[in-house]
Length: 425
Image (cartoon, rainbow, N blue to C red; front, side):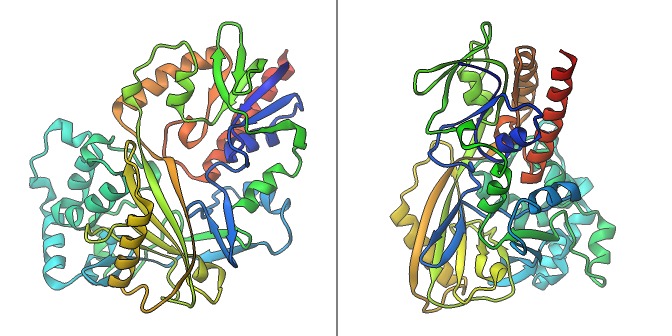
């Protein structure tokens, strides 16, 4: 078989690429039996859950309009975010560093004192180059050790000195001293996701919007890529078929893509963590008004919980729970669920509630660990792949931290480049 464009993965990145290509000579391979990647939705016992909390923050109006025009009318809700931090049994507004005045007196004094004297911290060059070093350098010891360090260690399931200084890029909520002090009298907790959109039918509705104009025969489910012959430009699939291609657009994890080629590379440069997700449905409402709560304290197993019922205005509490795991960790689901329920009670989220439905999934990978080594390895290897017509995109294909909209924008830009190349030939 021959195709001009072989697209690996029927998630957001792969489907968006197919939408923006001007050619219909493409084929999408999806290893799983369903489209959507991690952007899948579960409907169970009257509850609507995603594989994890997928909320959309559009910076490009034309992208949002493109999706909405392919969805049922009034499907999408726009929500003004209300997010909190659980700290010493109380709630603090997010982001932590702009709301230290809400802390108990001694914690507030420590955070403010260390913020002003952060320049006196002795950090060596290796530490300054790390994500952990960036936190200490910009916010001091008090803020870092009360929230920023423990929360992100729980999320990434690793030591923060292993991550690159800019591991979270524009998604990290920076604040300078003026912002922090001004916020004490004139609250302004706006961030890149101050408002978000969410479909009533779950995040999968955005996926369906991207498949509206894709013929069924263009997507092969249950068939993954196994090997890429870069010299002869032939892909071998899990069914044993060989497909000749001109271009490959892959959203598969970059380390796995490299392993399917003959390129020499250092596999140890690519580390990541898993996230164990519980979706929990209860018999009645719990806390109202809040959309998600961060839990930096190690006394709680999870690092974040979210409330679908407060987003969708439903009458029973519907939660997602996220627990970070190292890449080689194996979750004990039953034990973790018991611990989660205990911690929810301890936090006051449940109080005599009955769990009436639940679902779990392990995102593997979940967050890639961006390091200086991974950046260097990606730049070198992706350049060689592009010389053979292979483009690796998306959060996992690009080994980066990005939003779902970023994936669509990247796919659109790549498709535009490929369209121009095709016209030129």
